[in-house]
Image (cartoon, rainbow, N blue to C red; front, side, top):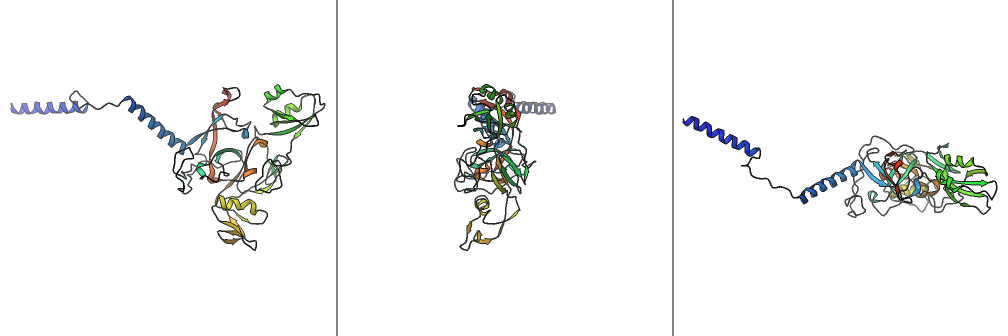
Amino acid sequence: MANKSAKKERKRRQEKRRESRAGGEDAPARPQKSKFREWFDALFFAVVVMLIVRTLIFDLFRIPTPSMEKSLMVGDYLFVSKLHYGTRTPRTLGVPFTQIHVKGLEFPNTRFPGFSEIKRGDAVVFNWPGDKDMPIDRRQHYIKRAIGMPGETIEVRDKVVYIDSVALDPFDGQQHLWAVKKKDARFRLNRTLLDQLGVEYRGIASDGVTVQLNGTAAAIDEVRAWPGIESITPFIEQGAHRPLYPPGRDASPDNYSATHIPAKGESVTLTRENWPIYEPVISAYEGRDTGVSGSGEFLVDGAPVAEYTFDQDYYFMMGDNRNNSEDSRFWGFVPMDHVVGKAVLIYFSWDRDRKLPRLKRIFSRIR
């Protein structure tokens, strides 16, 4: 009998333990989270995930200016992949995606391997090199098209870009100014049709027969077939509305003299002609002290040098709206350590003039 009683007692204890593990009525009640705590935890988790994703995988940007029209429009919202060219590690400590940071504290430049290199024609997001008062990762973001690659020589002649003396075909959506000569001063261009073609009317010259338009080559070809049009030619600017790079260069944005783009590991012989081009690069982006001795020798870190070997790749970026773009023609090369990522997708687009979304542009790939 005692043996049976002991077995019953053990069985009762086992059942009680099982009920306790299963949260039975004898188990101690777990404290329930308040609604506020549940919302806070969910929000905190979402913020952490967003920070990780935007820091390491992709980021979101909005097009604020027309420098890339007609390829990218003001009001386009973009997904920018950081994985294509490799994610950069943060250079500063501070509030993410703002200019608030701990001044004087900067980390070494590190980039994870990417699965693609920058190719000619890529729409690249980068930190603007001209914003030299801020650390690299806190500088303003720009988006332009990669035109000149490391180690190439770029030149612009009458709006045509030449790479190593070979003319480059225009990209889809690329536009610039055109001089349209009418057969008769009384002939009026149809503004409604121009708007439908995406061509901007810029005004008429003092001769009364020459009109200035801004548009793509495809759109201008349609205008060229209109009755009353005598000829259409590219409008060539004779001077720059602001200094070109490097300062003092006697050229215009439409006629930019041949310039060699530095490549990582490339050694360039320094001359009086190219010192104004490369000295800002060596000092600002390579972190070297530069100067010229009293005898005219070039100095890098205090030592006279006849040539210099570059530590990283550089790119020549240009906007698709060539006569309305502040780009490498004005402020120089873009160093690789300034590159953020590749613009790959338009996830939303807002037409601020019509106050309506551009539905056809939503979820369209960027070419």
